[in-house]
Amino acid sequence: MSLSGGLKDGGELRIYDTVDELATDLADYIAELSEVSVKERGFFAIAISGGSLISLMGKLCEAPYNKTIDWAKWYILWADERVVAKNHVDSNYKLAKDGLLSKVPVVPGHVYSINDSMSAEEAATEYEFVLRQLVKTRIVGVSECSDCPKFDLILLGMGPDGHIASLFPNHSALDEKDEWVTFITDSPKPPPERITFTLPVINSASNVAMVVTGGSKAEAVHLAIDDMGPDCPQLPARMVCPTNGKLVWFLDRLAASKLEAPEFAK
Ligand SMILES: O=C1O[C@H](COP(=O)(O)O)[C@@H](O)[C@H](O)[C@H]1O
Image (tube, rainbow, N blue to C red; front, side, top):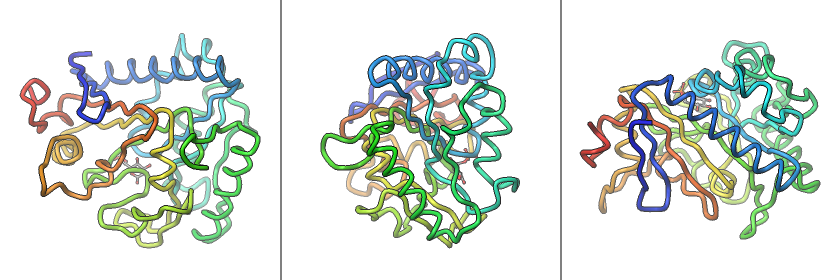
């Protein structure tokens, strides 16, 4: 790692010279959290996103991780999903299956993809029901401060507009306080119909990792992390702030290039 530091709100910033270094450290980070969760709870409840994150998780398919991780204890959900068929090129499930899940010995019954034969609204309702069953059986933990699920790890990417999962800037889904999973039909990024975990669920996790690479995201990284004073934008990525959990940003040099602290922006 080329640089690491603490953030004001207790989060951690890790900046890497190369995407390859980032991917290796990300794999170590995930493997360590998996080991701790399996030791403490008997399960590892992880929610993943789509996009560039999946290829950045690719080292998990290689030695030593493919052999050393206790894959049978993994329970995998999606922080967001596009409402398309599971074999559609836009499906976050397909992306993860092709790029990761088909290459490691996860238990197919522990992989919770959305029902792709429903409307976005119905799919969100059903996905929340599935999540409620997992919380009831404590496969997914429960937050000490609310009845929200407490994932061992939620992995998020971020778009150049600062969106995370399928929570977009200035969208009413950002205000959702009661539902665990909500839906949108007007995503500014295609495809328009999506389901997404809400902020209360994301912020109830034990660990949240924001994994962001590339210069096209540097401005959004700056707006999400730097002290912006009273003109602070309502950027979804800035609203990620786990109540009793730990936030770690994984950035490459390009994504970090507009951070204000000079040691980070080098
Ligand atoms: O549409 C989405 O975009 C974000 C960011 O994707 P990236 O390719 O720019 O990393 C992703 O995290 C989310 O899961 C996905 O649905």
